[in-house]
Length: 76
Image (cartoon, rainbow, N blue to C red; front, top):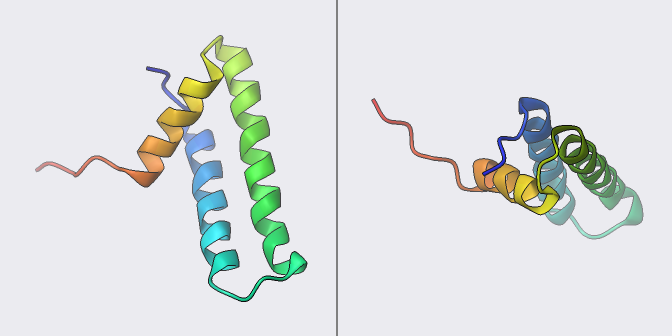
């Protein structure tokens, strides 16, 4: 499995936060613009990192989403 960078993980977290904010309010183009921008930035970064590391782009994106959306429980 591809190991995403911390930067890529943070970019996706930013996109998820922007999505949460956008969908918590009535739709406006201005309200959703930050979400669209964050998502586009994340997608561009996934493409760049996949090319730089010669990783499978889809697997890299899936790895990031798994880390952010389904984090492993911390063990003590």
